[in-house]
Length: 122
Image: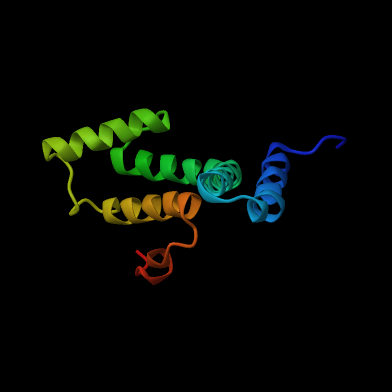
């Protein structure tokens, strides 16, 4: 491949901000550079971890709801059923689905969050 991937580009820009730019910056500019570097970290993790997490989430939702569909529609249906009380934590697999989905989202957004390591699995 003769071009860097999107993930590689994002990671290089993030590394530049963290290793070269931020040590030279002060005050609000340093803060905004840190925010930008954190945002690029989220983008990188979303690009690498997000697709697999979405596939697994969609599979779990299809099993829970008993039919296939786009992830967004399945999520809307699950929310509606929870809101209406037609599905609850007594439904086999719902608690595990919510736990796994939350863990995947936290792994992307805040991978160093201490609760991610401490929370019981399942």
